[in-house]
Image (cartoon, rainbow, N blue to C red; front, side, top):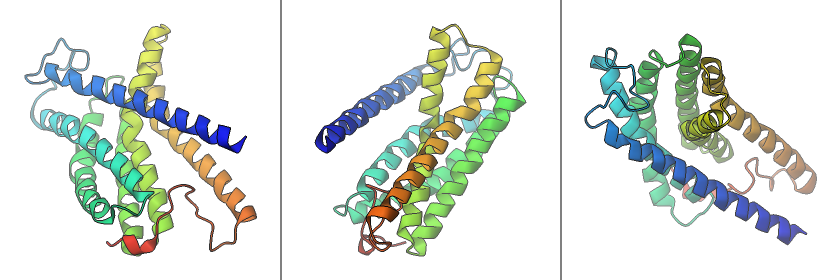
Length: 236
């Protein structure tokens, strides 16, 4: 039974990875409508007047930095669960954090001011940007203080938030297919696309850590099951 459960988990992980990769690729393929800006494309429709100055710069910074941050995050999560690539893990983190704090968070805040469905959705996207920055800073703080379990927790939260645009796109597609697309649905999606995955992760972590307390000694229990790594492989 445990072997079968592990196999099902592996299959679910592979299927989820393929799905997210497909969504990310579909988003990147749409970039052909942005160079130069095509105001008849899905995202830019009705934005001709606002697509100038700071918003235009933020838009291009965000769409170019986002996929890179997601791929770096995937590598960091993968390498953080193993002790084979410590140097690459550190260097990837040193690229990832400035990319988030200098590019994605500020550009996300600027873009949130022009959210399609108004201020409720805009506040949701702005909150996502702030939360991503907070998680990134916390991950760095705990790594520098060699508190690696907490570092992994915050780094994982940060990566989940970076994945939220893919979840937002999946939910938007489902709303279109089911003929439930509306301004209200867009606003809900702007919040749930990042709050729900974060809540699921928190619930899973608490359940897994509680289970670990009853199966291992405190020194042997990782608060991030399957993401534990030796401290000797990390440096700030």
